[in-house]
Length: 310
Ligand SMILES: [Zn+2]
Image 1: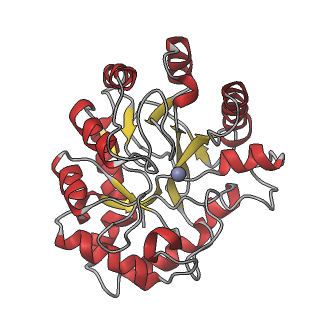
Image 2: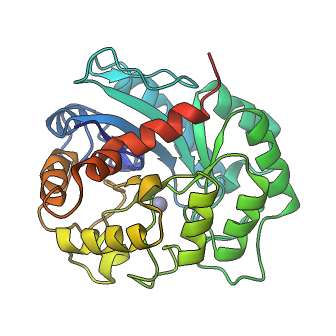
């Protein structure tokens, strides 16, 4: 089944651990062979660095991760990389890689850096991690803060350059501001707040608005965002899907695992190689057509509609 995973932090893990291999790496869950075993057809790779380091350090780490993406990942024969183009794999066994930036505060007001990111093929950007920065306010922040003037300018630039705004990690005020300003929005890795009340998850109103805007929601496979604890089962994922069905939002839903960004896992789901097992388990409870969509077709449709005609 065509399978897409719209968020992982493998680049950060590779940079952080100093093991830069995409083939021989005991630290990363997402690598060439786990993607092959999981038959992953689309994998989004996030550039990420914790905002607690100095701006200088953050920029250096992002540059290093871009270098790893270019020299370790897209050089592999199973990885296809066609920035700003639709997904059309030359082999069904291959993986279409996407490059994104998770948290953009280190580049606020620096137009040269935005152009650099675009030249490197970054197609999705989230404005914050959980913190407040010069662009917007993240999920740990009160709702008196939202999108800043610099954040609005940034989104206008993204609109003009076919770069999609990732509304994951924002607080509610920033989320609603982004929905107003951005032409194209998705949420790469968040779950349903009415099932698991966590600030990183989305309220029913947010989910309905995202569906109305023809966005996309990647469900994250992190126990804390599934049921508020350190362990979870496939049934917890099914509960989020049932609620999304009630909200009329299943048609915009897929996966945004957060592998290599999380430290606890759903039972039997600790890497891309386990996704086929989850998908086949879900077909016992949901219509096969729906599961095909969640597995990857919803994202493919969303993505291909969002890419400029080239
Ligand atoms: Zn994240």
